Length: 161
Image 1: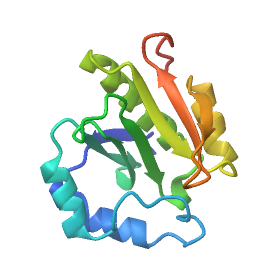
Image 2: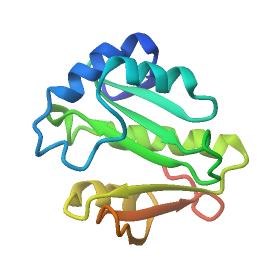
Image 3: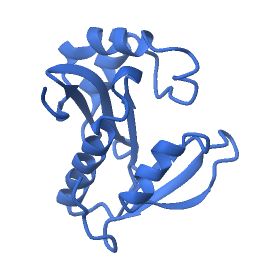
Image 4: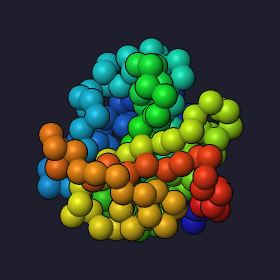
């Protein structure tokens, strides 16, 4: 068994990622829908990304999810972190590894002061992870009901993943 690993998500990964996303229960995916789960949509997002980043998440040599840092290509100074981990792989450190990787990437850019994310309030496991990693709750998003959290790269020391 190997621990979680993070790699660039490539266009060739799109069919496997789409299948993984579609294989999850609807209830599990209720609050996650960054784009259509179709290979052409995923490939388009990957090919059009300039500063935005998408990473493949592997566990035991198999893809079990993906993470992203989006919004920079649309001109936002504060990118948004998102992560999906397949239900069968949750609780094994995959999201923690992805978040640590994404925060390290953001810090290395030199021009990103904050990273934000949104999390469903009932997803206690996720928001406890985000708090433990240094994110602070800001508000509730009126449109989605999700909790908006922010990491301050200028004030928070980078914590080990």
